[in-house]
Amino acid sequence: MPEEARNDAREEHDAFAIGDFVLENGAKIRDLRIAYTTFGNLNPDKSNAILFPTWYSGTHTILEQAYIGRGRPLDPDRYFIILVNQIGNGVSSSPTTVPPPYGRARFPQPSIADDVRAQHRLVTEAFGITRLALVLGGSMGAQQTWEWAVRFPEAVARAAPIAGTAATTPHNQLLVDTFIEAITADPAYDDGWYAEGAVHRGLRRHARLFAAAGFTPALFNRALWRDHGFTTVDDFLTGFVEGHFLPQDPNNLLTLLRKWRSGDARPHGGGDLARALARVTAQVSVIAIEEDGFFPLADIEAEQRLVPHSRLVRVTSPWGHLALFGLDPDYNRAVDSALGALLSLPAPQEVP
Image 1 (cartoon, rainbow, N blue to C red):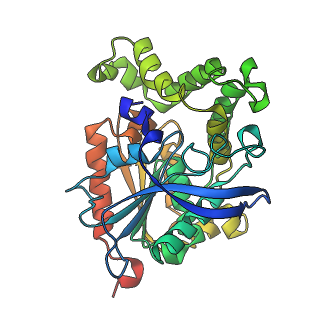
Image 2 (cartoon, rainbow, N blue to C red):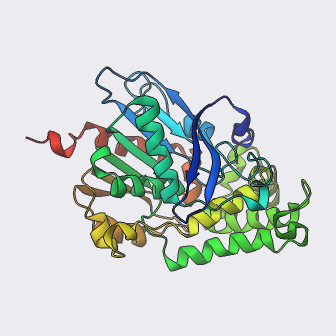
């Protein structure tokens, strides 16, 4: 990914100390810490807060770089924007940040629901916010956005899940399985007790699989990577994709992948997705990338039809799912337009 995104975990951030946190599977994370950063100021009635969770392998810095700016919909002069790192991403509590005996391969496996429960405590306890003007996120961030809208409907005025679903489909689970297996099949993985840098072959295989599904054929066929200083396909894959994943910790990535694979809002509807999504009271703009190979348009549209107060926004990009990283100006303009339109809508309870 971009050079600036590869070093983002070292950027400044704040941390909210929750203490011991029991996960929905019954395991416990000791001294859970949720890392976040904020932009702008909270207004007196606390009605201008936006929550933006991270996606797979990313941290708060890439969200700032790609989506926040003066004059854009996510404008820190107008809104109080909270960028929050999901559990396991290497900045919030993760296999690499928790000391023995509960770190590394012993780190408890959280879920998307656990992220949102912890984020709710951050929002309410650290800032006293009871209702968010907008929750948005891409990919795994979209999974968290859906969980927010279904679990805490009264706390979400507007929602914008981007390129992600409320319930991981069987096809998507198969895709995630290939990413998991690419890492764990490396002999150096050693059941999670590897030496530093030892799992580089697994991480490289994972990176290539990620690129094959995450980008579109048009990106490669039109050599659009040349615009970013790369000379060949292999140079692009090595410098851009492997360069993003090789510095990352395999246990951290696996924690996120397993969370991604199990994402599911259906328990809020007694196992029925339609009943779960019927709980949503927010104004919702469901943003889909037409060429997305991770979360296909048809899957996203099928869920959107189940959501009251919702609309489907289709955007297009030769970068496919990985347009999320903000390298395609046309994608950026389309998403900004969708977010601006959503933020201009009154929240449902504000409608006369």
